[in-house]
Amino acid sequence: MKTLAFPGRTLAQPTATAPESMGAVRQFLRVLHQCNPALSVGGWVHLVLGLAALLLLPLDDRMVLGLHVWFKPLKFALSGLIYLWTLGWLLADLPAPAQCAVRRISGGVALSMVMEILIVFGQAARGTTSHFNVAAPLDGLLFSIMGVFIMLNTGLLVWALVLTLRYRPFGPTAYVWGLRLGLVVFLVGSAIGGSMIHHLGHTIGAADGGPGLPGLGWSTRHGDLRAAHFLGLHALQALPLFGWLLARYVPRLQARGQGAGIALFTLLYTAAIAWLYVHALQGLPFWKLS
Image 1 (cartoon, one colour):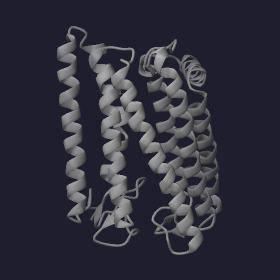
Image 2 (cartoon, helix red, strand yellow; image 1 turned 90 degrees about the vertical axis):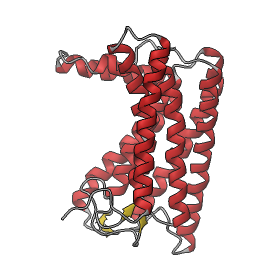
Image 3 (cartoon, helix red, strand yellow; image 1 turned 120 degrees about the vertical axis):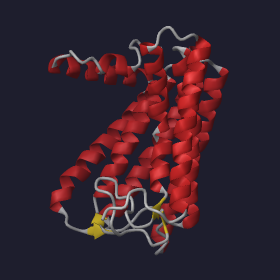
């Protein structure tokens, strides 16, 4: 069991000095590694590769689909880092009887994510795309390998969801259901990724590439499934965090009230994902820049 409360309780203190904040980050990383070495190390791999991509940005002027060749590896490294460390922290809240299964899940998830980021990084080094790329036998093989590991990751997250339903995680009701529902909505976001594979691209109404939102790359001319995919995947952070905040700042709520609060937030969050998905399928951009 973790020796720290949910990370926001330590890291979000408004009066903390810079040294205290750094100490809290170091403590968080130590506890995370003690609780889940596999996901901790997997996150560090993503951090190192993300820094490498950041260093390569000013040194390599190649473009892929209208974006800098190292933009996608940087984005995926950051996303993978957040995912792995969030999952490691959340799964540590499961009781001891579930931890043997947690270790197996964590090992498989870490392997899946490391393999994906290595392929993304390798394809960027070759100056080509990684996802939906079947232009040559090697590209198709690498995309197929990524698909296998994405399926493995999804299956392991289903197992994790079953564990959270069988063994009640530590914490107040709103946080516990935020964790469970966060996994459910994460899987919905993963299914949207499957839709992109079906379309062999993320842009609806045109080929991938072209003008996109700064920092995200989502199309500003056509529909882009990545917006709904992004929101779905980050339910893993948003829903448990909302549940924790609800329990912390509205302490008078009983368990039933906490459950109703997190259920309402999940409904609104899922409705936003559905709107983004349908909006993109109609070929409409998330945000059209003039």
